[in-house]
Image 1 (cartoon, rainbow, N blue to C red):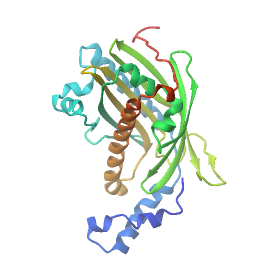
Image 2: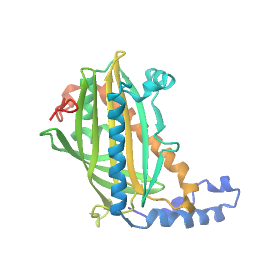
Image 3: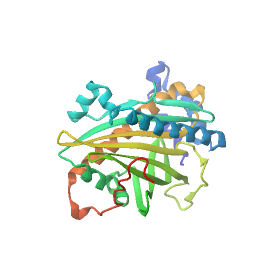
Image 4: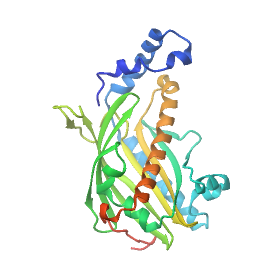
Length: 304
């Protein structure tokens, strides 16, 4: 993480308008509140990992329970208004709690869901993009700068990406390894669970002193990542619904009032952009430019 220019960038924040104070006073306050948040290194604690693991298990179990009880495959079908907006081409995003953020010991879990409709697509078209992990660096640029498949054997698929993100005026680079498991619910419905297996921050990214930190060390912007993706082919297209979960460092109460609007905006923007880019990749429709990627693993729930 690069913090040398933090103060210079923070002086451009429009906090002075919100507080009605002079620009120098506002900038000084902003720097005082945010510089420790942005630049202090933190360490991931076992209690935080335990809380994250429990939360992810609960989220996957909740979805499975909804399906087993005869509930709708897509969450948006519980709200006709949202479903209609998605069918009309809008990407709809909502928090999975009142604010999309859950406090856990030593950290925060951010949980948002987004839904989109890809007109004219088939489930196979969409999965061909989603499972072409080596092409993520093309589909999801500029956030993903490198990507590769690690393994497509067995029921779990593994891949890695290098992610570059500007968060609160600070550039953070991460190397992320993930696993994915795909389930076929029916001929027209499938879903997947994906989770990070290792996240390492790249310190001094882009410089001659660039190096990887050990897992659990660094800024703590992203300690863990997971998602639940659902795909349903109907209405002459494919609906995609993605629940995104992130574990990050805690934010002090002192800085929360200032950081909260930015975190919310980033969360909504990130999931919207991913679905926009996925839809664009599916519509590109150039088989010659797209490798096979990892083959779809059509595992029915409960199969061994």
